[in-house]
Length: 251
Image (tube, rainbow, N blue to C red; front, side, top):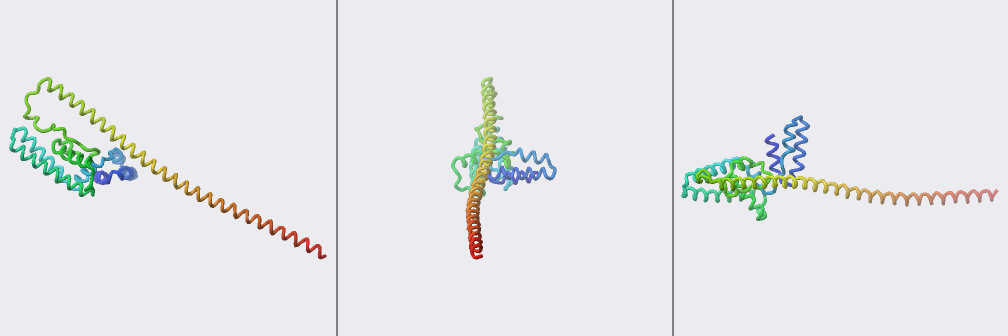
């Protein structure tokens, strides 16, 4: 099951839907309904998510490297160790840049758009800041981002009621954003599937039109051949009548 999901999330986004259907069908055929359900529920990744997934699946140690750096940064912030924070921040910048370059080379996307590059970089930074994001590497359906929260809460001052209200509002907004992003991802998946179906239907229509035109040409040729044969039959019948008439006249 894990290997099947690895295979699924390695494939480029434009081949994801077809492979998902194939793997789910194979799971059903072997009687593994649970695997078929999990495979069918897998979300198609965006281009940036695919780039990061592919990197994480090819280099299993990346998840632990990002998580360990995140732990070190959290410890440094908790200890208010400015010098260590600066050193680790520089290490973070270097690591994210290195991994992003490796990811794009491996994916054959050295000329990726700025938007995709920003999403990949943001996702790697989010994986350092948020253990939950790091845990999802290899199974991402969309790019992740780091808002700046995640480091230093342990060293923060005693929260005021206003802080609590603001934090609740931020949490609510984040939840609403996550719900909206999930809805958009599902809509994008549906749109891609409908686009694939539309493309396939158009291909079938074009093939049918080609076959129809060929059949119409065959029909026209057959009708002309029939007309010629019919005329030849009439001519032959007329020749027979004339020959019989001449024969009778000779008697």
